[in-house]
Image 1 (cartoon, rainbow, N blue to C red):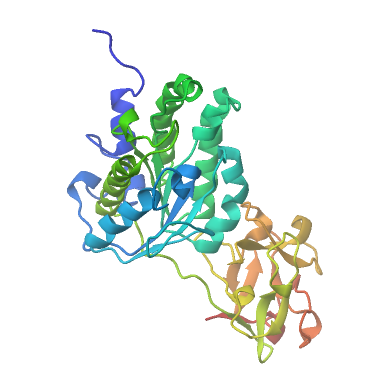
Image 2 (image 1 turned 180 degrees about the vertical axis):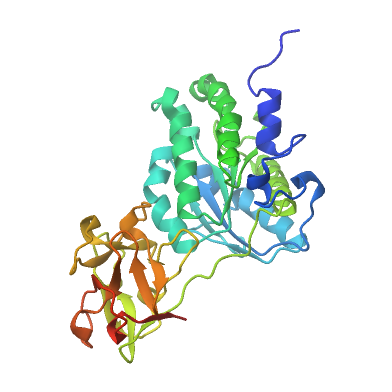
Length: 376
């Protein structure tokens, strides 16, 4: 009998975390026992982002709930405090938030990933993407590379998150079916590489779905969506037992200036790249809700606090920009404020201004009230 090579057994087992121990750094970061023998003390609270295309949105599901409705029921029954997050809402379920976009390819999801991930800060992402690349014959040979880049982007934007990557489901489209086996065969190796780099990425095998589980040529019916939920739920439980899933990070809070009554603010509440970071009267708005994830950035409205043009000189203006890992987006606690280590200069309210809308700058660290910032 000819041996099937679509999913090499060792690679698939490793990517699924079945039958092989994940690297110690990827599992716990402490060299503790392999995930298979560890158990979470209690089900972890989940801020879960369903991310992908129309399958995530719920096309083919009479209720519009996709796999999300079944997954919600399973996770809550298992004791997880649960919040689904995303910029879209679809379906009849109690929490229909999701980041599913009908017709989108991998590159289109990558185009919004920075904003939505840094804005919502999920601790679990369920990713089902690639159907439209394969069905549309869109640069198919490099589709796995685009997925790898997307995973790197997700884990950079949400370093605290566990990412569950679903294989592309069966279809009755001749075009997709011609492309699907080779694409899916690349996924175990991609996921293994992410794990070897210490990232919490896990493969979720969707091969339980067959053509009878489809509502049309591409989308599951509710029986198919239930099977997808079963697979994602198994991934969540395995990741939680491995100690991968940390409690959701704080959604953000005010950063108060040493100038009385003033806060670090995004001008006009705009999330557009290049919007000035300024001071303004503290008002509790989203433009003043800042988070400080473990990657050294300061984030609001889904964007990072940024020294314009990677400048390092005194007077370099401070803005918000899409998070990109640049040294001009790094901030360290220093002498009661924030210092950018690339320049050695501090986040500064020029002239100790108390005027709302004054754009912040980099300046030599001096410990003045105009360089004091207290996160609440």
